[in-house]
Length: 298
Image (cartoon, rainbow, N blue to C red; front, top):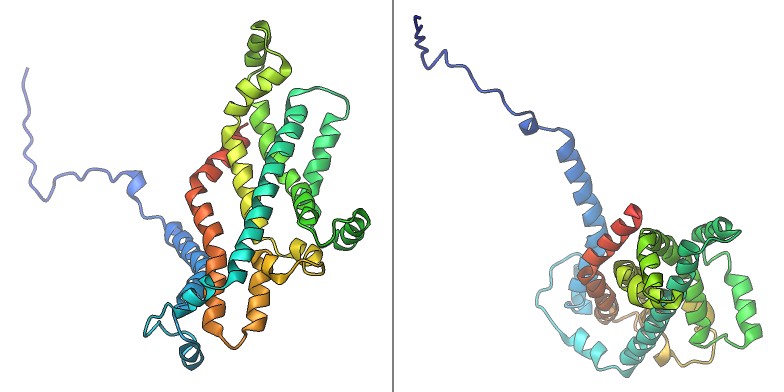
């Protein structure tokens, strides 16, 4: 048996095939460019307002798009030392916490029935909740105002909390129902064999398993309530509550109207009103994404 030796020079050496995954994709730069533009449009105004709070009104009038020079914290000190700001923070916190608790409790109870019970009209009821996503608050402004006046809730915090819960329920149920349906029936059957009741199964097994979904809907409800403007405008601004007890979105409007000449203080007030919801949302971003992913998988 003879062996043949082949000598290959460097110029004639075969080149390894380039992996297909390393090929340049012309679509990726375009996607990144679009993402950067969208991020700039979304973040740009927030950054401008935040930096504007560190500038004097004279500096803003002379160069609206300039950099703070010099940096000043007088606007922030003036806002933080104003009693009305802390009154607005108290009102927003009360409304957001109460609305969130109501949304989570009512949402998990309704979603549990829709997901785990088989009864006539269940799909129609679920569709009705889903249709609520297409029902904006602006359409219900007039009848809602008349209803709250009839019930004696106009101009009160309850007049904001109860409708806020109602308008947040469609999104809550759409997210929670897939979570609860994804829980295997075998777990419920095993719990029943061990002597657990429906309520026991709900408290001991279902709620812990649905925790990601509950956290997601709770965060969404809190942020929506904190940033809500139209509902408090319809209910509270025309009531008897003093302006010091209005929520922050209304407080920003009232403050900017009263101190329209002090642009730096208005920007500082607006920044302070945004910071809690922004920080809360950023810290809980992963939980929101995980909760929504679980709802889609379910």
